Length: 295
Image (cartoon, rainbow, N blue to C red; front, side):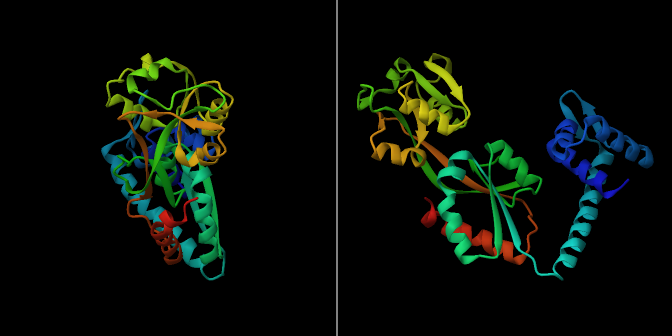
């Protein structure tokens, strides 16, 4: 058993999957399984219940996790304390959903760098579920997701709300306003990232997603926006991503009577997150100034 095995074991306990943990560490699943089996043999007990649904900690595994966390934490504290003997640039890693990453945070980070010039800040794009994983694995110090997190290991707080608007190309004839029951008449380019649209539709009379005339699904909001501008169909898009196109009249908003969608953005951190004083101050600064510094 070595420190690397402990870290791999902790990754499995968080991701509940040997294959995902192996993929994260860029090793083969068989190599990871062999390391775990060797450790289980040394301890004389099974630490994981393996099944086609994933990996679950046994009673002994729960105990092993408790001490593995302590051992890894002690090692990290040692490395941090030694590292503090030499001055170094501080690091902050942020993971955010695409619309926040691309359209909201760049202006905030510009202001952050003015006040914290010694910090190296990385901004990474990911879907909400992936953002949560990165934060849980402490690859990200903070994250921004759509809606609150239901994971007990994460604390989440609402930071801002962005309206999601139905738009179409200004070059195509379209009404200024429709009823929600008329939505199925319009060919739609669907964004798989905007779960808030489907959740809101489910609470209305248009609760059958299959009845909508969805031409195709796209992962990228930029791709959805481009397709809408080209006149391929109508699309639901976050206001922050289309402000310029609405102003330049490349896109036209279609108001839906008595129907509004908002993407509620939450900032997340790992529960009981251990950060140094400088990083904690920076995170607090972002929390306090975010609304005033968004693009």
